[in-house]
View 1 (cartoon, rainbow, N blue to C red):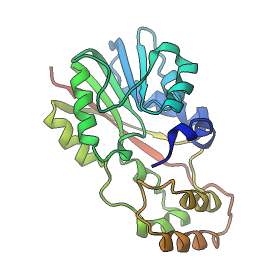
View 2 (view 1 turned 90 degrees about the vertical axis):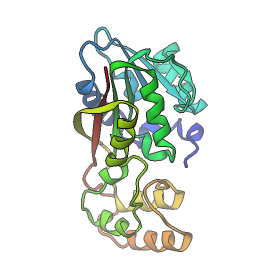
View 3 (view 1 turned 30 degrees about the horizontal axis):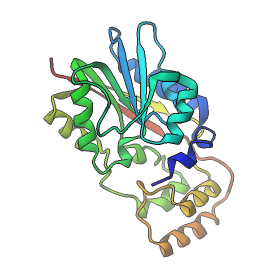
View 4 (view 1 turned 180 degrees about the horizontal axis):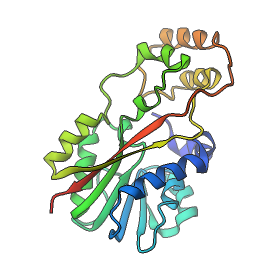
Length: 243
């Protein structure tokens, strides 16, 4: 797991910046009912996506467990950002119209508990919007992806089938779906090798040290070392709470 307090200063620049955030925000808002008056973005990070969840009549909050991330987000969003864990949200039962979680559940071994917590704070008829199959979304069939394939984690924390099953246990039913492009996240061989070396793929790849070294050597042999391969396409699910 990355140290997100440290990552906060460089996170946006290394994760596609505004184009990627705008793509995510548009897709989220398309799944949030027009009558929604409140939305909580959990694991909001630097608040780059949260800031773009802008719509007349919609009040947006953010929460993140990392002090570094929450500090950057607060510079964008002010007091609408709170420091807190998605496992115990600082909101009352049935107090929100919508909750969003983008690029979060794939990191959490206890993702079912987080889904349950999101269901708790939603009003009847409210919507939980979340990315699913995040790491799998990066597999665009490139030469880089072919080298990563033997080491991919097969049972993702945010697998769509798993999330849908858990959601149903807490009164959340699938109500919509969207996809959006992760601009600026296409993997070049050079960047991927550096990320493997730094352990950035902890949720996506199962590698011991020898396997990581071998993978880095094979990545270094690919052509176009600095050429990004196709951008990933992420999947969002909307889950509506039973009335």
